[in-house]
Image (cartoon, rainbow, N blue to C red; front, side, top):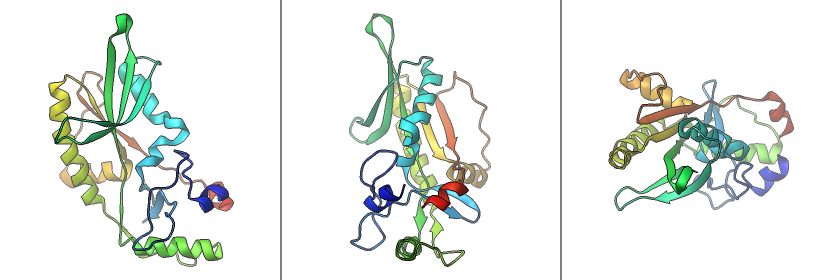
Length: 210
């Protein structure tokens, strides 16, 4: 854990962290989750790749009804539709292919300079001297981003007669439901769009290992 943090190497992708520190030319932050108002929040979608993409594989197995899954990352869509984070595929008899597009969506900090201060202090001293640092969550912006993409890309996937999966940090999902008083149907494999939430459980032992 310590060597990964010092080298800014993501433990979930085994690649260099993509999150640059706020308004600095310092190395990436190496921070993919935060504590905010007592909640544990995922702020980097790379975290959904934990345990060799286990959650993505598990969802694909459930919806495609097979254990033989191939994942392809960052797949381009027709002009105007951007990209999709993942496509999960399985090959049926006689060579036909079943597939499902999957998007992952984390939350985001605002006033991120406060988070930068916390990271810098911890690296310099090994402690966090404050109980609260002056950063917030940009949850509403993340809701707008996710739902705009959801509406746009759903038209394309419905035309192609394909299901569509979203994996969301649970803080974004809960805020979306509460903000707009939405009621979603229970899981039904006959539906077209699926929402799965990812909750982050704080591990006190890991904190002591930092």
